Image (cartoon, rainbow, N blue to C red):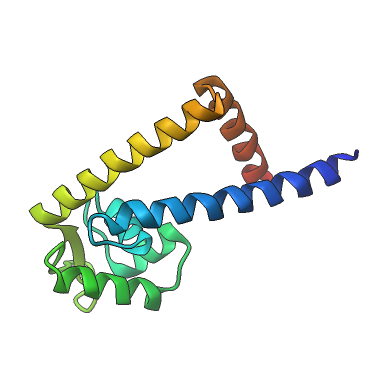
Length: 142
C-alpha cells in the first residue's frame, strides 16, 4: 500500500469516527437540553468572552450559523451579551452561571462516556497521544 492510499484510508476513518462521536455527543448534549452545536459554542466561551465572528473562526463555521445558535443560547439564559469596546455592533458573548453549570454537566457526562468506550476498545493514553501527534503533523503541512 502506498503512503497516499494509507492517508486516504486514515481520512476515511477520521470522518467515520467524527460521525460516530457526533452521534453519541448529541445524546449527551440532549440530556442537558442542548445540541452539539450549542455545546461547541459554550465550549469556546468556557475561558473567555468572544464575538460571534471570533467563535465562528475558531469553530470553522459561518458567522450566520453561529449567530443563530448564539441567539438561542442568549434567549435561554445560558449566554449573555456585553458591550465590546473594539466593535460597537459586535457584542461580546460570555457564559452565564447557568451556562457554566450546563457545560460542566455535559463535560462530566462526556468524559465518563468516552472513558468507558476507550476502556472497552483497549485504547491507551499513549496510543491516543501518538494518533494525535500524527494528525497534527498532517495538519501542519496541509
